[in-house]
Image 1 (spheres, helix red, strand yellow):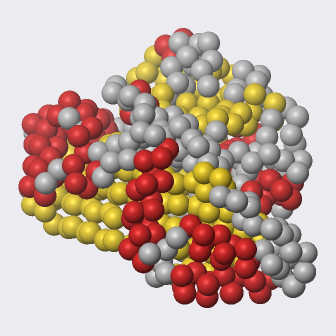
Image 2 (cartoon, rainbow, N blue to C red):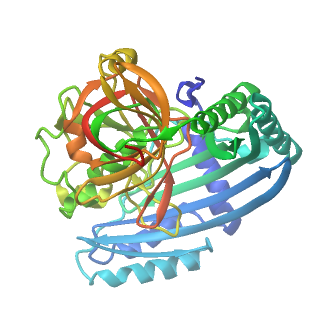
Image 3 (tube, rainbow, N blue to C red):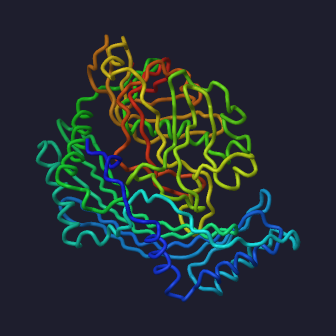
Length: 492
Protein backbone atom coordinates (compact mmCIF):
# COMPACT_ATOMS: atom_id res chain seq x y z
CA UNK A 1 0.00 0.00 0.00
CA UNK A 2 1.31 3.43 -0.90
CA UNK A 3 0.92 5.28 2.40
CA UNK A 4 0.98 9.10 2.63
CA UNK A 5 2.93 8.72 5.87
CA UNK A 6 5.96 7.62 3.88
CA UNK A 7 5.97 10.61 1.54
CA UNK A 8 9.05 12.84 1.48
CA UNK A 9 9.32 15.30 4.35
CA UNK A 10 8.77 18.95 3.52
CA UNK A 11 11.79 21.22 3.71
CA UNK A 12 9.97 24.54 3.20
CA UNK A 13 11.40 27.02 5.72
CA UNK A 14 9.24 28.49 8.47
CA UNK A 15 9.94 31.97 7.10
CA UNK A 16 8.09 31.08 3.91
CA UNK A 17 4.96 30.32 5.91
CA UNK A 18 5.16 33.69 7.66
CA UNK A 19 5.65 35.47 4.35
CA UNK A 20 2.64 33.74 2.80
CA UNK A 21 0.48 34.40 5.87
CA UNK A 22 1.29 38.10 5.97
CA UNK A 23 0.77 38.43 2.21
CA UNK A 24 -2.61 36.67 2.28
CA UNK A 25 -4.01 37.75 5.65
CA UNK A 26 -2.55 41.13 6.59
CA UNK A 27 -1.37 42.93 3.46
CA UNK A 28 -4.81 43.31 1.75
CA UNK A 29 -5.96 45.67 4.53
CA UNK A 30 -2.51 47.07 5.41
CA UNK A 31 -2.48 45.51 8.87
CA UNK A 32 0.89 45.63 10.60
CA UNK A 33 2.28 43.39 13.32
CA UNK A 34 2.60 46.27 15.78
CA UNK A 35 -1.14 46.96 15.40
CA UNK A 36 -1.93 43.36 16.31
CA UNK A 37 0.30 43.71 19.36
CA UNK A 38 -1.63 46.82 20.37
CA UNK A 39 -4.92 44.93 20.13
CA UNK A 40 -3.57 42.18 22.37
CA UNK A 41 -2.11 44.75 24.73
CA UNK A 42 -5.53 46.36 25.07
CA UNK A 43 -7.07 42.98 25.97
CA UNK A 44 -4.34 42.33 28.54
CA UNK A 45 -5.05 45.65 30.29
CA UNK A 46 -7.79 43.65 32.00
CA UNK A 47 -7.49 40.65 34.29
CA UNK A 48 -6.82 38.11 31.58
CA UNK A 49 -4.72 34.93 31.78
CA UNK A 50 -4.41 34.31 28.07
CA UNK A 51 -5.37 35.98 24.78
CA UNK A 52 -4.82 35.25 21.11
CA UNK A 53 -5.72 36.31 17.59
CA UNK A 54 -6.37 33.59 15.02
CA UNK A 55 -6.35 34.58 11.35
CA UNK A 56 -7.49 32.19 8.63
CA UNK A 57 -7.90 32.18 4.87
CA UNK A 58 -9.47 29.12 3.29
CA UNK A 59 -10.26 28.19 -0.29
CA UNK A 60 -11.97 24.85 -0.91
CA UNK A 61 -13.64 22.86 -3.66
CA UNK A 62 -15.40 19.56 -4.21
CA UNK A 63 -16.49 17.63 -7.31
CA UNK A 64 -18.87 14.70 -7.52
CA UNK A 65 -19.24 12.25 -10.42
CA UNK A 66 -22.24 9.97 -10.73
CA UNK A 67 -22.92 7.61 -13.61
CA UNK A 68 -20.24 9.23 -15.72
CA UNK A 69 -21.43 12.78 -15.24
CA UNK A 70 -20.44 15.58 -12.88
CA UNK A 71 -23.57 15.93 -10.75
CA UNK A 72 -22.26 18.20 -8.00
CA UNK A 73 -19.65 20.85 -7.50
CA UNK A 74 -18.77 23.43 -4.91
CA UNK A 75 -16.21 26.18 -4.55
CA UNK A 76 -15.88 28.55 -1.61
CA UNK A 77 -13.57 31.17 -0.18
CA UNK A 78 -13.68 32.16 3.47
CA UNK A 79 -11.52 34.31 5.67
CA UNK A 80 -11.69 35.97 9.03
CA UNK A 81 -10.19 36.44 12.47
CA UNK A 82 -11.14 35.11 15.88
CA UNK A 83 -10.26 37.01 19.06
CA UNK A 84 -10.14 35.10 22.35
CA UNK A 85 -9.53 36.04 25.96
CA UNK A 86 -9.35 33.56 28.83
CA UNK A 87 -9.68 34.34 32.53
CA UNK A 88 -9.48 31.36 34.87
CA UNK A 89 -12.07 28.93 33.41
CA UNK A 90 -14.02 31.59 31.53
CA UNK A 91 -13.53 32.20 27.81
CA UNK A 92 -14.73 35.20 25.83
CA UNK A 93 -14.64 34.90 22.07
CA UNK A 94 -15.58 37.09 19.15
CA UNK A 95 -14.91 36.79 15.44
CA UNK A 96 -15.26 38.70 12.22
CA UNK A 97 -15.03 37.85 8.54
CA UNK A 98 -13.56 41.31 8.03
CA UNK A 99 -9.81 41.33 8.68
CA UNK A 100 -9.35 45.02 9.48
CA UNK A 101 -8.01 46.97 12.45
CA UNK A 102 -11.49 48.26 13.29
CA UNK A 103 -12.96 44.74 13.29
CA UNK A 104 -10.13 43.52 15.51
CA UNK A 105 -10.63 46.36 17.96
CA UNK A 106 -14.38 45.73 18.15
CA UNK A 107 -13.85 42.02 18.72
CA UNK A 108 -11.22 42.70 21.36
CA UNK A 109 -13.61 45.05 23.14
CA UNK A 110 -16.22 42.30 23.29
CA UNK A 111 -13.81 39.78 24.81
CA UNK A 112 -12.92 42.04 27.73
CA UNK A 113 -16.38 41.52 29.20
CA UNK A 114 -15.25 38.47 31.16
CA UNK A 115 -12.75 40.35 33.33
CA UNK A 116 -12.56 43.48 35.43
CA UNK A 117 -9.92 46.18 35.26
CA UNK A 118 -6.71 45.49 37.11
CA UNK A 119 -3.90 42.93 37.19
CA UNK A 120 -2.54 44.36 33.96
CA UNK A 121 -0.09 42.16 32.08
CA UNK A 122 2.43 43.34 29.55
CA UNK A 123 2.00 41.96 26.04
CA UNK A 124 5.17 40.15 25.04
CA UNK A 125 7.44 41.13 22.18
CA UNK A 126 6.86 39.25 18.95
CA UNK A 127 8.57 35.87 18.95
CA UNK A 128 8.22 33.88 15.77
CA UNK A 129 7.57 30.26 16.67
CA UNK A 130 9.99 28.19 14.61
CA UNK A 131 8.79 24.74 13.60
CA UNK A 132 9.57 22.02 11.12
CA UNK A 133 6.96 22.13 8.37
CA UNK A 134 5.41 18.70 7.83
CA UNK A 135 4.05 19.43 4.36
CA UNK A 136 4.76 21.75 1.46
CA UNK A 137 2.94 25.13 1.38
CA UNK A 138 1.24 24.24 -1.90
CA UNK A 139 -2.20 25.03 -3.29
CA UNK A 140 -3.79 21.71 -4.30
CA UNK A 141 -6.71 23.40 -6.04
CA UNK A 142 -4.29 24.90 -8.56
CA UNK A 143 -2.44 21.63 -9.12
CA UNK A 144 -4.91 20.38 -11.76
CA UNK A 145 -7.18 22.10 -14.23
CA UNK A 146 -10.94 21.59 -14.04
CA UNK A 147 -10.77 19.25 -17.03
CA UNK A 148 -8.02 17.18 -15.38
CA UNK A 149 -10.05 16.84 -12.17
CA UNK A 150 -13.04 15.52 -14.11
CA UNK A 151 -10.79 13.08 -16.01
CA UNK A 152 -9.38 11.84 -12.70
CA UNK A 153 -12.90 11.01 -11.53
CA UNK A 154 -13.74 9.38 -14.84
CA UNK A 155 -10.66 7.15 -14.60
CA UNK A 156 -11.60 6.14 -11.07
CA UNK A 157 -15.11 5.18 -12.22
CA UNK A 158 -13.73 3.27 -15.21
CA UNK A 159 -11.34 1.27 -13.01
CA UNK A 160 -14.23 0.19 -10.77
CA UNK A 161 -16.54 -0.85 -13.60
CA UNK A 162 -13.84 -2.90 -15.32
CA UNK A 163 -13.11 -4.89 -12.16
CA UNK A 164 -16.44 -6.70 -12.04
CA UNK A 165 -19.51 -6.78 -14.29
CA UNK A 166 -21.77 -6.87 -11.22
CA UNK A 167 -20.92 -3.24 -10.45
CA UNK A 168 -24.03 -1.31 -11.51
CA UNK A 169 -23.50 2.12 -9.94
CA UNK A 170 -20.41 4.19 -9.21
CA UNK A 171 -20.08 7.57 -7.52
CA UNK A 172 -16.71 9.28 -7.14
CA UNK A 173 -15.66 12.48 -5.44
CA UNK A 174 -12.65 14.71 -5.13
CA UNK A 175 -12.09 17.59 -2.72
CA UNK A 176 -9.28 20.00 -1.99
CA UNK A 177 -8.51 22.81 0.42
CA UNK A 178 -5.85 25.48 0.68
CA UNK A 179 -5.67 27.05 4.13
CA UNK A 180 -3.41 29.76 5.52
CA UNK A 181 -3.44 30.47 9.25
CA UNK A 182 -1.60 32.77 11.61
CA UNK A 183 -1.76 32.89 15.40
CA UNK A 184 -0.54 35.72 17.60
CA UNK A 185 -0.63 35.32 21.38
CA UNK A 186 -0.41 37.72 24.29
CA UNK A 187 3.00 36.30 25.23
CA UNK A 188 4.36 37.39 21.85
CA UNK A 189 4.48 33.92 20.30
CA UNK A 190 3.45 34.15 16.65
CA UNK A 191 3.12 31.17 14.33
CA UNK A 192 1.97 30.62 10.76
CA UNK A 193 1.06 27.55 8.77
CA UNK A 194 0.03 26.79 5.20
CA UNK A 195 -2.12 23.66 5.11
CA UNK A 196 -3.01 21.79 1.91
CA UNK A 197 -5.58 18.98 2.14
CA UNK A 198 -7.01 16.66 -0.52
CA UNK A 199 -9.25 13.62 -0.56
CA UNK A 200 -10.64 11.21 -3.15
CA UNK A 201 -13.52 8.82 -2.48
CA UNK A 202 -15.42 6.13 -4.36
CA UNK A 203 -18.65 4.32 -3.59
CA UNK A 204 -19.93 1.38 -5.67
CA UNK A 205 -23.07 -0.75 -5.74
CA UNK A 206 -22.97 -4.36 -6.86
CA UNK A 207 -26.05 -6.35 -7.86
CA UNK A 208 -26.56 -10.10 -8.28
CA UNK A 209 -29.63 -12.31 -8.08
CA UNK A 210 -31.79 -9.45 -6.85
CA UNK A 211 -29.37 -8.51 -4.07
CA UNK A 212 -27.64 -5.13 -3.83
CA UNK A 213 -24.58 -4.34 -1.71
CA UNK A 214 -22.24 -1.38 -1.54
CA UNK A 215 -18.57 -0.79 -0.95
CA UNK A 216 -16.49 2.33 -0.44
CA UNK A 217 -12.86 3.41 -0.28
CA UNK A 218 -10.67 6.48 -0.64
CA UNK A 219 -7.74 8.38 0.73
CA UNK A 220 -5.88 11.64 0.89
CA UNK A 221 -3.57 13.83 2.92
CA UNK A 222 -1.69 17.12 3.06
CA UNK A 223 -0.37 17.27 -0.50
CA UNK A 224 -1.80 18.15 -3.91
CA UNK A 225 -3.79 16.14 -6.44
CA UNK A 226 -0.59 14.84 -8.00
CA UNK A 227 -0.55 12.14 -5.32
CA UNK A 228 -3.49 10.38 -6.96
CA UNK A 229 -1.71 8.37 -9.62
CA UNK A 230 -3.55 5.71 -11.62
CA UNK A 231 -1.99 3.12 -9.32
CA UNK A 232 -3.50 4.79 -6.25
CA UNK A 233 -6.90 5.26 -7.93
CA UNK A 234 -6.95 1.62 -9.01
CA UNK A 235 -6.21 0.60 -5.43
CA UNK A 236 -9.21 2.60 -4.17
CA UNK A 237 -11.44 1.06 -6.85
CA UNK A 238 -10.27 -2.45 -5.96
CA UNK A 239 -11.02 -1.97 -2.27
CA UNK A 240 -14.51 -0.58 -2.90
CA UNK A 241 -15.41 -3.30 -5.41
CA UNK A 242 -13.99 -6.04 -3.19
CA UNK A 243 -16.10 -4.91 -0.24
CA UNK A 244 -19.29 -4.80 -2.31
CA UNK A 245 -18.71 -8.19 -3.96
CA UNK A 246 -17.83 -9.85 -0.65
CA UNK A 247 -21.06 -8.60 0.88
CA UNK A 248 -23.10 -10.07 -1.98
CA UNK A 249 -22.28 -13.49 -0.55
CA UNK A 250 -22.38 -12.50 3.11
CA UNK A 251 -24.56 -14.43 5.56
CA UNK A 252 -26.31 -12.90 8.56
CA UNK A 253 -23.84 -12.31 11.40
CA UNK A 254 -24.38 -14.34 14.57
CA UNK A 255 -25.05 -12.60 17.88
CA UNK A 256 -23.49 -13.13 21.29
CA UNK A 257 -20.25 -12.82 23.19
CA UNK A 258 -17.29 -14.01 21.16
CA UNK A 259 -13.65 -13.48 20.29
CA UNK A 260 -13.27 -10.61 17.82
CA UNK A 261 -10.23 -9.94 15.67
CA UNK A 262 -9.96 -6.36 14.42
CA UNK A 263 -8.04 -5.78 11.20
CA UNK A 264 -5.15 -3.33 10.88
CA UNK A 265 -5.60 0.29 9.77
CA UNK A 266 -9.05 1.87 9.56
CA UNK A 267 -10.55 -0.29 12.37
CA UNK A 268 -8.49 2.04 14.57
CA UNK A 269 -11.54 4.31 14.30
CA UNK A 270 -12.96 2.26 17.17
CA UNK A 271 -9.83 3.14 19.17
CA UNK A 272 -10.27 6.80 18.23
CA UNK A 273 -13.90 7.01 19.27
CA UNK A 274 -14.16 4.63 22.20
CA UNK A 275 -10.84 5.53 23.84
CA UNK A 276 -9.23 8.58 22.22
CA UNK A 277 -11.96 11.08 23.07
CA UNK A 278 -11.85 9.93 26.67
CA UNK A 279 -8.19 10.97 26.80
CA UNK A 280 -8.81 14.59 25.76
CA UNK A 281 -7.98 17.07 28.51
CA UNK A 282 -11.29 18.92 28.78
CA UNK A 283 -13.29 15.79 29.52
CA UNK A 284 -10.79 14.76 32.19
CA UNK A 285 -10.57 18.19 33.81
CA UNK A 286 -14.34 18.17 34.19
CA UNK A 287 -14.31 14.59 35.47
CA UNK A 288 -16.65 13.40 32.74
CA UNK A 289 -14.29 10.85 31.17
CA UNK A 290 -14.04 7.19 32.08
CA UNK A 291 -10.26 7.86 32.34
CA UNK A 292 -10.47 10.81 34.77
CA UNK A 293 -7.93 10.76 37.64
CA UNK A 294 -6.35 7.53 36.39
CA UNK A 295 -2.87 8.66 35.28
CA UNK A 296 -0.32 6.09 36.38
CA UNK A 297 -2.90 3.35 36.66
CA UNK A 298 -3.29 0.18 34.58
CA UNK A 299 -6.10 0.93 32.12
CA UNK A 300 -5.26 -1.59 29.40
CA UNK A 301 -3.67 -4.98 28.95
CA UNK A 302 0.11 -5.15 29.05
CA UNK A 303 1.63 -4.71 25.61
CA UNK A 304 -0.77 -1.94 24.60
CA UNK A 305 0.79 1.44 23.80
CA UNK A 306 -1.31 4.20 22.26
CA UNK A 307 0.06 7.48 20.93
CA UNK A 308 -1.30 10.60 19.33
CA UNK A 309 1.18 11.90 16.77
CA UNK A 310 0.60 15.11 14.84
CA UNK A 311 4.15 15.13 13.44
CA UNK A 312 3.87 12.53 10.64
CA UNK A 313 4.70 14.16 7.31
CA UNK A 314 1.81 14.77 4.92
CA UNK A 315 -0.77 12.91 6.99
CA UNK A 316 -4.38 14.11 7.01
CA UNK A 317 -4.41 14.58 10.79
CA UNK A 318 -0.99 16.23 11.07
CA UNK A 319 -0.31 19.89 11.87
CA UNK A 320 3.01 21.71 11.76
CA UNK A 321 1.65 23.86 14.58
CA UNK A 322 -1.67 23.59 16.37
CA UNK A 323 -4.29 26.33 16.40
CA UNK A 324 -2.67 28.06 19.38
CA UNK A 325 0.73 28.22 17.68
CA UNK A 326 2.28 25.29 19.58
CA UNK A 327 4.29 22.69 17.64
CA UNK A 328 2.55 19.36 17.17
CA UNK A 329 3.95 16.52 19.25
CA UNK A 330 4.06 12.76 19.56
CA UNK A 331 2.28 12.17 22.85
CA UNK A 332 2.27 8.80 24.59
CA UNK A 333 -1.19 8.33 26.08
CA UNK A 334 -1.04 4.71 27.23
CA UNK A 335 2.28 2.88 27.64
CA UNK A 336 2.35 -0.88 28.14
CA UNK A 337 -1.16 -0.62 29.55
CA UNK A 338 -0.42 2.31 31.93
CA UNK A 339 -2.19 5.65 31.41
CA UNK A 340 0.54 8.29 30.99
CA UNK A 341 -1.29 11.48 30.09
CA UNK A 342 -3.99 13.40 28.26
CA UNK A 343 -4.21 15.54 25.14
CA UNK A 344 -4.02 19.20 26.12
CA UNK A 345 -4.62 22.69 24.85
CA UNK A 346 -3.43 25.77 26.77
CA UNK A 347 -6.55 26.36 28.88
CA UNK A 348 -6.97 22.80 30.15
CA UNK A 349 -3.23 22.26 30.62
CA UNK A 350 -3.03 25.39 32.80
CA UNK A 351 -6.03 24.45 34.90
CA UNK A 352 -4.79 20.86 35.33
CA UNK A 353 -1.17 21.94 35.94
CA UNK A 354 0.01 19.80 33.03
CA UNK A 355 2.07 20.39 29.92
CA UNK A 356 0.61 21.57 26.63
CA UNK A 357 0.76 18.77 24.03
CA UNK A 358 0.08 20.75 20.83
CA UNK A 359 -3.48 19.42 20.43
CA UNK A 360 -5.46 22.68 20.33
CA UNK A 361 -7.66 22.52 17.23
CA UNK A 362 -10.54 24.50 15.82
CA UNK A 363 -12.69 24.09 12.75
CA UNK A 364 -12.22 27.71 11.68
CA UNK A 365 -11.62 31.26 12.86
CA UNK A 366 -15.28 31.31 13.98
CA UNK A 367 -14.70 28.57 16.57
CA UNK A 368 -12.82 28.33 19.85
CA UNK A 369 -10.02 25.77 20.11
CA UNK A 370 -10.30 22.65 22.25
CA UNK A 371 -8.10 19.59 22.81
CA UNK A 372 -8.52 17.23 19.86
CA UNK A 373 -6.77 14.19 18.43
CA UNK A 374 -4.48 14.35 15.38
CA UNK A 375 -3.27 10.88 14.26
CA UNK A 376 -4.12 8.40 17.00
CA UNK A 377 -2.90 4.83 16.80
CA UNK A 378 -1.73 1.75 18.69
CA UNK A 379 1.88 0.63 18.33
CA UNK A 380 2.94 -2.77 17.06
CA UNK A 381 2.95 -5.89 19.17
CA UNK A 382 4.79 -9.12 18.45
CA UNK A 383 2.23 -11.42 16.81
CA UNK A 384 1.95 -11.92 13.02
CA UNK A 385 -1.70 -11.44 11.96
CA UNK A 386 -1.83 -15.02 10.64
CA UNK A 387 -0.93 -16.28 14.11
CA UNK A 388 -3.75 -14.25 15.64
CA UNK A 389 -6.29 -15.72 13.22
CA UNK A 390 -5.01 -19.26 13.89
CA UNK A 391 -5.44 -18.75 17.64
CA UNK A 392 -9.22 -18.24 17.33
CA UNK A 393 -11.41 -21.34 17.39
CA UNK A 394 -14.67 -19.49 16.76
CA UNK A 395 -15.00 -15.75 16.33
CA UNK A 396 -15.48 -12.69 14.14
CA UNK A 397 -12.89 -10.97 11.94
CA UNK A 398 -13.85 -7.31 11.42
CA UNK A 399 -11.85 -5.82 8.54
CA UNK A 400 -13.65 -2.54 7.99
CA UNK A 401 -16.08 -0.32 9.87
CA UNK A 402 -18.97 1.94 9.00
CA UNK A 403 -20.66 4.23 11.52
CA UNK A 404 -20.66 4.14 15.29
CA UNK A 405 -21.73 5.90 18.48
CA UNK A 406 -19.85 6.49 21.74
CA UNK A 407 -20.73 7.83 25.19
CA UNK A 408 -17.61 9.63 26.46
CA UNK A 409 -18.67 9.52 30.11
CA UNK A 410 -19.29 5.77 30.31
CA UNK A 411 -17.05 4.69 27.43
CA UNK A 412 -19.85 2.59 25.92
CA UNK A 413 -19.78 2.21 22.15
CA UNK A 414 -21.70 0.64 19.26
CA UNK A 415 -19.95 0.13 15.89
CA UNK A 416 -21.19 -1.51 12.71
CA UNK A 417 -18.82 -3.62 10.60
CA UNK A 418 -18.81 -2.84 6.87
CA UNK A 419 -16.76 -5.95 6.04
CA UNK A 420 -16.48 -8.94 8.33
CA UNK A 421 -15.88 -12.70 8.24
CA UNK A 422 -16.34 -15.67 10.52
CA UNK A 423 -13.30 -17.47 11.91
CA UNK A 424 -13.71 -21.20 12.43
CA UNK A 425 -10.99 -23.45 13.79
CA UNK A 426 -8.30 -20.85 13.10
CA UNK A 427 -9.35 -20.14 9.51
CA UNK A 428 -11.27 -17.30 7.86
CA UNK A 429 -14.34 -18.94 6.33
CA UNK A 430 -17.37 -17.00 5.08
CA UNK A 431 -18.31 -13.29 5.04
CA UNK A 432 -21.09 -11.96 7.29
CA UNK A 433 -23.08 -8.75 7.33
CA UNK A 434 -25.05 -6.93 9.97
CA UNK A 435 -22.37 -7.40 12.65
CA UNK A 436 -22.42 -4.75 15.36
CA UNK A 437 -19.72 -4.49 18.03
CA UNK A 438 -21.02 -3.44 21.43
CA UNK A 439 -18.80 -2.73 24.40
CA UNK A 440 -17.04 -0.35 26.74
CA UNK A 441 -13.82 1.35 25.62
CA UNK A 442 -11.80 1.04 28.83
CA UNK A 443 -13.04 -2.53 29.32
CA UNK A 444 -12.13 -3.51 25.75
CA UNK A 445 -8.55 -2.33 26.33
CA UNK A 446 -8.24 -4.88 29.12
CA UNK A 447 -9.61 -7.68 26.93
CA UNK A 448 -6.98 -7.36 24.20
CA UNK A 449 -5.06 -10.64 24.38
CA UNK A 450 -2.89 -10.40 21.24
CA UNK A 451 -1.41 -7.38 19.43
CA UNK A 452 -0.22 -7.81 15.85
CA UNK A 453 3.03 -6.64 14.28
CA UNK A 454 1.32 -5.11 11.20
CA UNK A 455 0.41 -1.60 12.38
CA UNK A 456 -1.07 0.39 9.50
CA UNK A 457 -2.40 3.92 9.34
CA UNK A 458 -5.66 4.57 7.55
CA UNK A 459 -5.61 5.83 3.97
CA UNK A 460 -6.46 9.41 4.92
CA UNK A 461 -10.24 9.81 5.08
CA UNK A 462 -11.04 10.50 8.73
CA UNK A 463 -13.05 13.47 9.99
CA UNK A 464 -13.76 13.88 13.70
CA UNK A 465 -16.71 15.71 15.17
CA UNK A 466 -16.79 17.21 18.65
CA UNK A 467 -19.16 19.83 20.05
CA UNK A 468 -20.24 20.82 16.55
CA UNK A 469 -16.71 21.22 15.17
CA UNK A 470 -15.21 18.94 12.51
CA UNK A 471 -11.47 18.51 11.91
CA UNK A 472 -9.42 16.05 9.79
CA UNK A 473 -7.81 13.19 11.72
CA UNK A 474 -5.94 9.94 11.21
CA UNK A 475 -6.25 6.55 12.90
CA UNK A 476 -4.35 3.30 12.87
CA UNK A 477 -3.62 0.04 14.65
CA UNK A 478 -2.19 -3.44 14.14
CA UNK A 479 -4.40 -6.53 14.04
CA UNK A 480 -5.92 -7.12 17.50
CA UNK A 481 -7.52 -10.07 19.24
CA UNK A 482 -10.22 -9.06 21.76
CA UNK A 483 -11.72 -11.75 23.99
CA UNK A 484 -15.36 -11.74 25.05
CA UNK A 485 -16.70 -8.82 23.02
CA UNK A 486 -20.46 -8.59 22.47
CA UNK A 487 -21.53 -8.90 18.83
CA UNK A 488 -25.00 -7.91 17.78
CA UNK A 489 -26.17 -9.70 14.64
CA UNK A 490 -29.20 -10.96 12.78
CA UNK A 491 -28.19 -14.60 12.55
CA UNK A 492 -28.39 -17.44 15.02
